[in-house]
Amino acid sequence: MRPRNWGALALLVAIVGWWYSPASPRVPAFAVAAHGSQPQCPMPPRVAAGDPPLQSAVPSNVASFQLAAAQLQPLAGFSVDARVLSRRDYSLGREAQLSPTDLALGWGRMRDDAVLSQLQISQSSRWYRYGWSGDPPLPPEEIARSSANMHLIPSDAESAAELHRVRDGSHIRIDGWLVEATSPDGYHWRSSTTREDTGAGACEVVYVCAITQL
Picture (tube, rainbow, N blue to C red):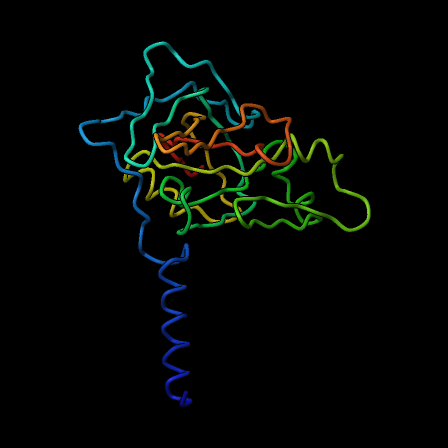
Protein backbone atom coordinates (compact mmCIF):
# COMPACT_ATOMS: atom_id res chain seq x y z
CA MET A 1 0.00 0.00 0.00
CA ARG A 2 1.30 3.44 -0.92
CA PRO A 3 2.11 5.95 1.87
CA ARG A 4 -0.76 8.16 0.68
CA ASN A 5 -3.18 5.26 1.06
CA TRP A 6 -1.85 4.48 4.55
CA GLY A 7 -2.42 8.10 5.51
CA ALA A 8 -6.00 8.02 4.23
CA LEU A 9 -6.67 4.79 6.10
CA ALA A 10 -5.24 6.21 9.33
CA LEU A 11 -7.40 9.32 8.94
CA LEU A 12 -10.50 7.18 8.38
CA VAL A 13 -9.77 5.10 11.49
CA ALA A 14 -9.25 8.29 13.53
CA ILE A 15 -12.56 9.75 12.31
CA VAL A 16 -14.47 6.55 13.11
CA GLY A 17 -12.86 6.37 16.56
CA TRP A 18 -13.77 9.99 17.26
CA TRP A 19 -17.36 9.48 16.04
CA TYR A 20 -17.90 6.64 18.51
CA SER A 21 -16.07 8.35 21.38
CA PRO A 22 -17.63 10.47 24.18
CA ALA A 23 -16.19 13.57 22.44
CA SER A 24 -18.39 12.98 19.40
CA PRO A 25 -21.62 14.98 18.92
CA ARG A 26 -23.35 11.69 18.12
CA VAL A 27 -25.71 10.66 20.92
CA PRO A 28 -26.10 6.85 21.01
CA ALA A 29 -29.68 5.75 20.40
CA PHE A 30 -31.62 4.50 23.40
CA ALA A 31 -33.25 1.06 23.31
CA VAL A 32 -36.59 1.39 21.56
CA ALA A 33 -39.85 0.07 22.94
CA ALA A 34 -41.36 -3.19 21.77
CA HIS A 35 -44.01 -2.86 19.06
CA GLY A 36 -47.26 -1.63 20.57
CA SER A 37 -45.66 -0.81 23.92
CA GLN A 38 -45.01 2.61 25.45
CA PRO A 39 -42.96 1.90 28.60
CA GLN A 40 -42.80 4.67 31.17
CA CYS A 41 -39.95 5.10 33.65
CA PRO A 42 -41.49 6.27 36.93
CA MET A 43 -39.04 7.90 39.31
CA PRO A 44 -38.07 5.85 42.39
CA PRO A 45 -37.41 7.44 45.82
CA ARG A 46 -34.39 9.73 45.51
CA VAL A 47 -31.18 9.44 47.51
CA ALA A 48 -30.26 12.33 49.81
CA ALA A 49 -27.19 14.30 48.76
CA GLY A 50 -24.00 12.64 49.98
CA ASP A 51 -25.70 9.42 51.12
CA PRO A 52 -24.86 5.90 49.90
CA PRO A 53 -27.01 4.53 47.05
CA LEU A 54 -30.69 4.18 47.93
CA GLN A 55 -32.39 0.92 46.94
CA SER A 56 -36.16 0.67 47.35
CA ALA A 57 -38.92 -1.88 46.87
CA VAL A 58 -40.78 -2.10 43.55
CA PRO A 59 -44.34 -0.78 43.93
CA SER A 60 -47.11 -3.07 42.74
CA ASN A 61 -48.08 -0.62 39.99
CA VAL A 62 -44.64 -0.69 38.33
CA ALA A 63 -44.72 -3.34 35.61
CA SER A 64 -41.96 -4.71 33.40
CA PHE A 65 -40.52 -2.47 30.70
CA GLN A 66 -41.14 -3.95 27.26
CA LEU A 67 -38.31 -3.08 24.88
CA ALA A 68 -37.60 -4.41 21.40
CA ALA A 69 -34.27 -5.88 22.52
CA ALA A 70 -35.49 -7.44 25.79
CA GLN A 71 -38.04 -7.32 28.57
CA LEU A 72 -36.78 -5.51 31.66
CA GLN A 73 -38.18 -6.79 34.94
CA PRO A 74 -37.66 -4.24 37.74
CA LEU A 75 -35.92 -5.73 40.78
CA ALA A 76 -35.62 -2.57 42.90
CA GLY A 77 -35.78 1.19 42.72
CA PHE A 78 -32.32 2.73 42.61
CA SER A 79 -30.92 6.21 43.19
CA VAL A 80 -27.22 7.02 43.48
CA ASP A 81 -25.34 10.27 44.18
CA ALA A 82 -21.77 9.59 43.07
CA ARG A 83 -18.59 10.65 41.37
CA VAL A 84 -17.72 9.19 37.99
CA LEU A 85 -14.47 7.25 38.37
CA SER A 86 -14.38 6.10 34.75
CA ARG A 87 -16.65 5.65 31.74
CA ARG A 88 -16.51 3.19 28.87
CA ASP A 89 -18.72 3.14 25.77
CA TYR A 90 -19.70 -0.01 23.90
CA SER A 91 -21.14 -0.44 20.42
CA LEU A 92 -20.70 -4.17 19.84
CA GLY A 93 -22.34 -7.18 21.49
CA ARG A 94 -25.82 -8.06 22.65
CA GLU A 95 -25.60 -5.86 25.73
CA ALA A 96 -24.82 -2.78 23.62
CA GLN A 97 -28.33 -3.02 22.15
CA LEU A 98 -29.52 -2.00 25.61
CA SER A 99 -26.60 -0.28 27.33
CA PRO A 100 -24.25 1.95 25.30
CA THR A 101 -22.21 3.04 28.33
CA ASP A 102 -20.83 1.71 31.61
CA LEU A 103 -19.97 4.12 34.41
CA ALA A 104 -17.71 3.17 37.30
CA LEU A 105 -19.10 5.20 40.20
CA GLY A 106 -17.80 6.00 43.68
CA TRP A 107 -19.53 7.32 46.79
CA GLY A 108 -18.53 7.96 50.38
CA ARG A 109 -14.75 8.28 50.62
CA MET A 110 -14.45 6.91 47.09
CA ARG A 111 -15.23 10.44 45.90
CA ASP A 112 -12.18 12.00 47.57
CA ASP A 113 -9.28 13.21 45.41
CA ALA A 114 -6.76 12.08 48.04
CA VAL A 115 -8.09 8.52 47.77
CA LEU A 116 -8.57 8.37 44.02
CA SER A 117 -5.09 9.73 43.32
CA GLN A 118 -3.68 6.53 44.86
CA LEU A 119 -5.81 4.14 42.81
CA GLN A 120 -5.40 2.89 39.25
CA ILE A 121 -8.88 2.56 37.74
CA SER A 122 -9.84 1.06 34.39
CA GLN A 123 -12.75 -0.51 32.53
CA SER A 124 -12.91 -3.10 29.75
CA SER A 125 -15.20 -5.88 28.56
CA ARG A 126 -17.96 -4.64 30.89
CA TRP A 127 -15.66 -4.92 33.94
CA TYR A 128 -14.37 -2.26 36.33
CA ARG A 129 -10.93 -2.79 37.84
CA TYR A 130 -8.90 -0.95 40.45
CA GLY A 131 -5.49 -1.40 42.04
CA TRP A 132 -2.85 0.42 44.06
CA SER A 133 0.86 0.45 44.84
CA GLY A 134 1.98 -0.19 48.40
CA ASP A 135 -0.77 0.11 50.99
CA PRO A 136 -4.35 0.74 49.79
CA PRO A 137 -5.72 4.23 50.49
CA LEU A 138 -8.82 2.64 52.06
CA PRO A 139 -9.58 -0.83 53.42
CA PRO A 140 -10.22 -3.01 50.33
CA GLU A 141 -13.69 -3.94 51.60
CA GLU A 142 -14.60 -0.23 51.78
CA ILE A 143 -13.39 0.31 48.23
CA ALA A 144 -15.57 -2.60 47.08
CA ARG A 145 -18.75 -1.48 48.85
CA SER A 146 -18.25 2.22 47.99
CA SER A 147 -17.86 1.81 44.24
CA ALA A 148 -19.37 -0.21 41.43
CA ASN A 149 -19.54 -0.63 37.68
CA MET A 150 -22.99 0.14 36.33
CA HIS A 151 -24.44 -0.88 32.95
CA LEU A 152 -26.79 1.98 32.06
CA ILE A 153 -29.87 1.60 29.87
CA PRO A 154 -31.25 5.05 28.95
CA SER A 155 -35.05 5.08 28.99
CA ASP A 156 -35.47 7.94 26.50
CA ALA A 157 -33.65 10.47 24.34
CA GLU A 158 -33.17 12.91 27.24
CA SER A 159 -31.47 10.39 29.52
CA ALA A 160 -29.36 9.15 26.57
CA ALA A 161 -28.21 12.72 25.87
CA GLU A 162 -27.39 13.34 29.54
CA LEU A 163 -25.44 10.09 29.73
CA HIS A 164 -23.46 11.11 26.64
CA ARG A 165 -22.44 14.36 28.40
CA VAL A 166 -21.07 12.62 31.51
CA ARG A 167 -17.29 12.71 31.87
CA ASP A 168 -14.71 11.22 34.24
CA GLY A 169 -14.81 13.16 37.50
CA SER A 170 -18.40 14.34 37.06
CA HIS A 171 -20.66 14.49 40.12
CA ILE A 172 -24.01 13.03 39.11
CA ARG A 173 -27.21 11.51 40.41
CA ILE A 174 -28.84 8.60 38.59
CA ASP A 175 -32.46 7.64 39.27
CA GLY A 176 -33.95 4.47 37.84
CA TRP A 177 -34.53 0.77 38.36
CA LEU A 178 -32.28 -2.24 38.81
CA VAL A 179 -33.52 -4.72 36.24
CA GLU A 180 -33.26 -8.22 34.88
CA ALA A 181 -33.25 -8.32 31.07
CA THR A 182 -34.65 -11.40 29.32
CA SER A 183 -35.80 -12.31 25.82
CA PRO A 184 -37.57 -15.32 24.27
CA ASP A 185 -34.33 -16.65 22.76
CA GLY A 186 -32.92 -17.28 26.25
CA TYR A 187 -30.92 -14.07 26.64
CA HIS A 188 -30.49 -13.10 30.30
CA TRP A 189 -28.74 -10.15 32.01
CA ARG A 190 -29.46 -9.61 35.70
CA SER A 191 -28.46 -6.74 37.93
CA SER A 192 -26.83 -7.12 41.30
CA THR A 193 -29.09 -5.94 44.11
CA THR A 194 -26.41 -5.40 46.76
CA ARG A 195 -23.39 -3.13 47.07
CA GLU A 196 -21.47 -5.76 49.03
CA ASP A 197 -20.60 -8.15 46.20
CA THR A 198 -17.58 -8.30 43.89
CA GLY A 199 -16.60 -10.23 40.78
CA ALA A 200 -18.90 -11.73 38.15
CA GLY A 201 -22.51 -10.65 38.57
CA ALA A 202 -21.64 -7.75 40.89
CA CYS A 203 -22.45 -4.96 38.43
CA GLU A 204 -25.70 -3.06 38.49
CA VAL A 205 -27.90 -3.06 35.37
CA VAL A 206 -29.88 0.19 35.60
CA TYR A 207 -32.86 1.31 33.54
CA VAL A 208 -32.24 5.04 33.76
CA CYS A 209 -35.15 7.43 34.24
CA ALA A 210 -32.95 10.49 34.79
CA ILE A 211 -29.33 11.58 35.05
CA THR A 212 -28.60 14.88 36.78
CA GLN A 213 -25.25 16.65 36.76
CA LEU A 214 -24.64 18.03 40.27
